[in-house]
Length: 402
Ligand code: NAP
Ligand code: MG
Image (cartoon, rainbow, N blue to C red; front, side, top):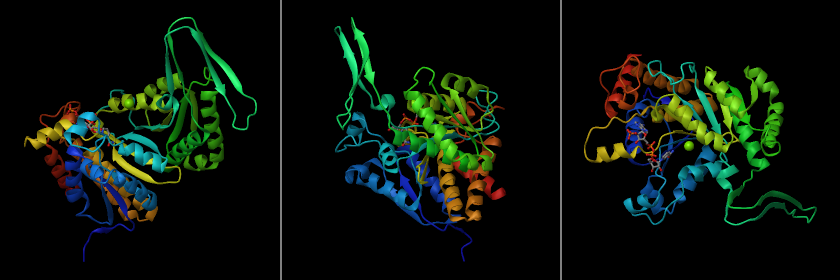
C-alpha cells in the first residue's frame, strides 16, 4: 500500500514556458508527486501548444478551473512581435492570464513570502502586505485624443430610452492639449469588492481600500460607496473573523502602508494596483518571493508565481550553463493550490502537507541555502548561492529531516 497522502478532488495544472517550465517539472516530480496521491487535470499552455490549438487550450484550462475550482499555473509567454518570430507563431496570441482572468471574472492578489534572513526594504514590514488589484477599466480601457488646435471638448451621455441627455464641458481648448475619457461599471467594481472581502475573510486579514474621493467625488466616490455597501453586508462575518475594514484617502494609504507592520489586504484601483504592486514586491525582496492567486467572486482559485518565464536564465540553461533560478514562488503556487484543495475537501492531512513543504522551503533559506537573487540581499550575508536544482534538493533534505 502506498503511504502517499490522498487528495480527494482534482487540481487543474496549467503548464507554461521557458525556465519557469523547467523548474515547474522539477518541483512536480520531486516535491509533489512522491508524497501525494493526486488526480491532476493537465493543460499544456506552452506557447507551441497554444499556437497549435489556436489558443483554444487556454479557454479549456479556464473552464476546467471553473469546474474543479482549484488550479495551479506556470508562467507563460505573452507573445510580442519578437516572440512571434522566435517561436514561428501563427499570430500574436493574447495574454493567457488575461484570457483566464476574464473567463473567471477574477481578482488577482499578490502576496510576498516573508523569510527572516531576507529583510524587507522597509524595516517595519514584518507581515505580508497583500495587494488586490482591480483589473478592469479606468485608464486601461480609456479613449484619448491629442488636441492640436483650439476647440471644445464635451462629455455627452445619451440614454438608450431617449431620456434626458447630459452634456458637460470638459475643456475649452485655446491651444494644444490632451484629453481622455474613462469608465468603470458597477458590476465590475462590486465583483472586485466581493473578491477582496472573500479573500480578507478566508485569510483573516484586515481590508484597506484607498481612493481620492475628495477630488473625484463621483467616480472615486462610487468605488468608496460600493465598498461600503458590500462591507455592510458582511459586518457579522468580519466581526467573527476578528478583522476590520478601513477606508483611506489613497495618499494617506501610501503613508500608512509604509509605517505599518503589514498583515493586511490593500485593495487598489486599477492604476494604483499596477504601480503599488511593483513597489511592494521590490520592497519585500525578490520577484522570486512573490506569489499570486486569482480569486473569482464565486470562489474559484488559480495559484501562480508572480514572475514571468525568467527568459535570460532559460537561454543560459539552453547553452548548458548552470542557472540559479529561484523556485520558491512556484513551489508556493503548488502549496497554495494544494492547501486550498484540502480546505475545500476538508482533508486536514492535505493542508498539513502544504504547510510542511512551505516550512521546509523557509527553513532551507534560513539555513543559508538560497539562489543568487536572495543571496544578494540576505542578512546575515551568505558566502555562496545554490544552483536551481541544488536548492530544490536542499528543500527535500530539509523536509526529510523534519
Ligand atoms: P520575468 O520572467 O519575471 O523576469 C524578469 C527578471 O527578474 C529576470 O530576468 C530575473 O533577473 C528576475 N527574476 C524573475 N523571476 C526570477 C526567479 N524566479 N529567480 C531569479 N530571478 C528572477 O519577467 P520578463 O523578463 O519581463 O518576462 C519574461 C517572459 O515572461 C515574457 O515572455 C512575459 O510575457 C512572461 N511573463 C509571464 C507572466 C505570467 O505568466 N504570469 C508574468 C510576467 C511575465 P536576472 O535576469 O537579472 O537574473
Ligand atoms: Mg506594473
